[in-house]
Amino acid sequence: MTAVLSTHGLVARYGDFQALYGVDTELHEGEAVALIGANGAGKSTFLRSIMGLLPVAREMVRLNGEPVGGTATDRMVQKGIAIVPEGRRLFTGMSVEDNLRVAMDQAARIGAKGGWTLARLHKLFPILSEKARAQVQSLSGGQQQMVAIGRALLCQPRVLLCDEISLGLAPKVIREIYAALPEIRATGTAVIVVEQDVGLAQSASDRLYCMLEGRVTLTGKSGDVTRDQISKAYFGAG
Ligand code: ATP
Image (cartoon, rainbow, N blue to C red; front, top):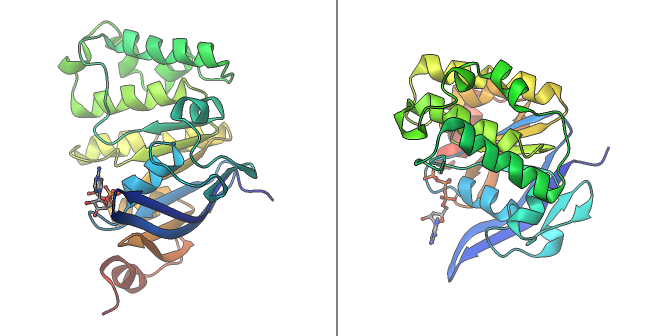
């Protein structure tokens, strides 16, 4: 089975600094993969490289087998990848609904088609309906995260990239947000979650990759990898 998304020897640099050293990964339809690793391991860089936000060679990223590395971000969205970025990056001077409408307009402009509508999103996160007219900055962090996820879903992705969506949120809210993942996956959308909380990453995913200093140091089924394996992969065996 061809992976919906795969990376092949993915290398990324910020000027002279090399952040990724040949990262191989794959993600299948409807699958959830977690990416764990300490601060600075390269997780966000990995997501940015896929989204065309860093220059990478064409062959290093494939979407349904097609080489797409280095493709401009809006083209990647058009091809079915959306990101919930670290820090959410919402339009804070606008209402919840207007933020979502921007995404719907973008999806319409690029011809993205799929089953995500405002009504469906309101079923997934009812608070987005209740707060439709509220300014985004008046929302709690968790509610804002729901807007950010909603905005990505309205781009009708086949692959959803989530960058630390639990960061700074209360446990109850984190559970609420992660509870949405199965429903998202049920539509066939595959998900990569970058997650600092290892237990949460394991419980929310089928497989995981652990990164250390720009390399994958562990990969396996999330339910099978042991605490000891993770600890070595996370901090280095030495
Ligand atoms: P975090 O959990 O802190 O976000 P991360 O695993 O996502 O960590 P990255 O943000 O991908 O790590 O960073 C990987 C490496 O690249 C780090 O050493 C970081 O300092 C470096 N880096 C990240 N962004 C830049 C940048 N814009 N310019 C230069 N170096 C950068």
